[in-house]
Image 1 (cartoon, rainbow, N blue to C red):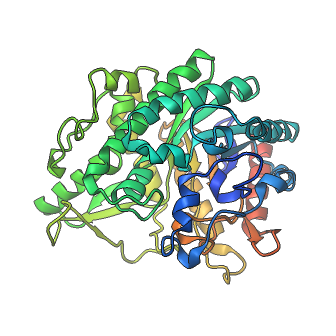
Image 2: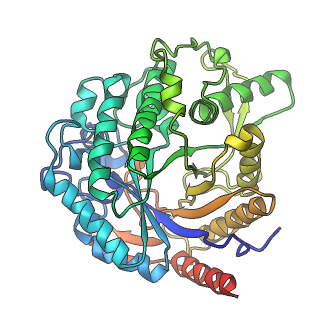
Length: 446
């Protein structure tokens, strides 16, 4: 396997975070409530009742965090903009203080020599829009395009590339189908209009950004899907899950059509959500890059009980993260090659916009996280050697943070955060990543 430093000239090293997971300050300077503020306040929704009200207090401590990024040697920093901080009710009057915060953040990053890579939506929908139907309401897509215009008009002179959405599959399934994430709806397959309206929002916003001369990306959580056995039933179940998890959010953008979801019993119009011309609106702007969030492969078997046409099966005899996710680094290489085989010339350059693992806090000296990153970078380098155009790697995450329904129990950070004192302490993986970035620069300079 190629040396992990054997990556293209101009390859960008980064780290990623998200607004609700680190910012805190949820009631300060005119920010409106998000679905996560409301969801986390409901008893029993989040482990131990944790909320993101303070999180990492990044809203006040961002200079300290940028100093950590600069010492790390990052080329880029992926973060998200909190829609309710900019537009407290999701539409209508702009909150000047909210835009001013992101002005300060962008300028401080640039002063540190770090390129900002903002995500416009990372799951913190303004609660006022959810009260009107949220992503089940087609109007939300148009409000998103308006929001994209406001933010990029303010920051686009300094920020050349943007991500529209983060992981629409996860937000749709956990937030609208299963109810384990905000906004907590339990619609099962009838949640799929929320998927379509997010993709429509992407298409509308992508046109807005391209009109301003900006580059557009979409970050999907993708997983290679393998059948538990070679039986026809397991193969069919794996194909159905692949269509739902992967192709539902890539085919419309890259091929201009939805995959066949008939095995799921889903109507072609996604329960009336798809209107004439929608697929053109989604695909026509094109993508300048595909963001890939990768954590683990998925093994699927035929269902043993009525319901969805698949069951999840654990992958045995491999390490697992503290979150219980199987660690199979070469699955990343396999996924990248399968994307090329599936989409061919329509596949844009790829950036790994999230990759990392949760490690138990007692683990020292952070070796599982180092091993995870090292092995996945080897897999990434192997894929580039096979001709895949990969432009960068953003590890998840810079900081320990609010891990959604798990609260503060899952720790993904290169930097340990004591949430009682907000003290930041770089871990061994931080030093390892810093040295890797420096070594790669030396190699490229030869």
